Picture 1 (cartoon, rainbow, N blue to C red):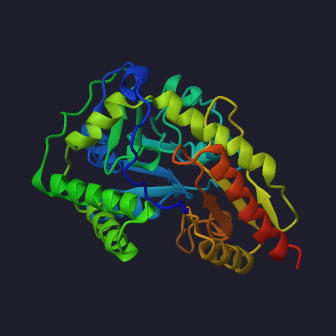
Picture 2 (tube, rainbow, N blue to C red):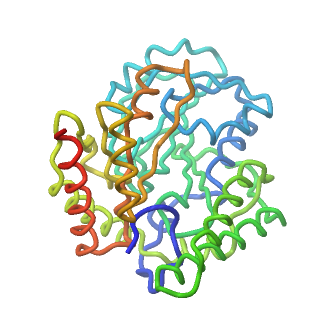
Length: 347
């Protein structure tokens, strides 16, 4: 049994009300979650985009290379988002991106805005915030929370005209096909077949790197079929129940705390552990990996962006608890985490 890392092919996914049915609005479906951002910037002729200091900087590197002006405003999870936004020196033509970090945030109250508001709902696609948003634009990476190889989505709560729908391209199609092959190999590996772990990890790494250079493209046919049939409420509810079990089983301490949900109308992306220093975080991470638990680091923040954001990124771990796992799996995961934490954080 392993926990975390990229999704594998999952048999017998729950069928029911899909994400597209739940959103009940016009959407564009892209090959990747970063592509909607570029399309918004082009479509709205945005001069400058403000993004929170705490975000996945790698995901926007392509926009930097293409010459888009990206500025940071100081915001780290747990801080006052409304206050952070009010401090931005907005100019005409600017846009501001806000993120529902880890699916733990509540909807911010932003009134009388004089900028284009863009929201990133990658960590919780169906929160109360995403479904009652009044932003100009909402987007998300679909593959962060759904068992698909590719996918990004764009919609406008204000019913603005969407950019032209993306079309299939050969580079994106080939990338998704290779990524689905990696997912199939991982599924076989987890079932005990004669598959070497490095075989699928190599494909995951290579295809992840290629997302950054893909042309604007449509989601793969396989990805569209999965999200059109998947019971999105059921899939998210399974994760919420798993998160509740994990959260109740793990106690915060002076040296490691669990980041609590501010948003009662949503589903946490994962269990977020925040340690009081990087050395401790790295020791716990290494011990988890030895026990086949593969936590994520979200994210590595470049130096000289914002000290609080840098520290959060250096000291956090993200523990996956999604619908791949049942309650027995999660109880086992909690036991592993508690054993490691009790052995290390009390030293």
